[in-house]
Length: 72
Image (cartoon, rainbow, N blue to C red):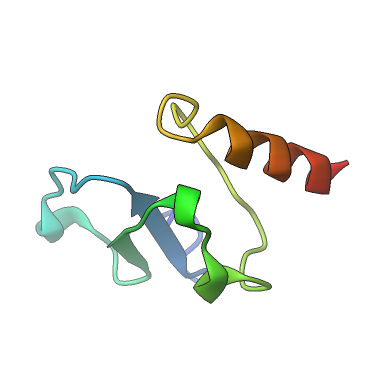
């Protein structure tokens, strides 16, 4: 996405560090370690689009229910 949209700032968030070859990371892309179960207050009102994949096993049931109720 960062290569396709160079005018956009991309932030990748994960619970555990991934294997990333920094030689291939575009300048408009960064990665952070964070836990969505604790909330992401530093991102409130900062995201235009959220893409998630394979997060259900790492997110508490309570957090999933709260997130779903706010999106309705």
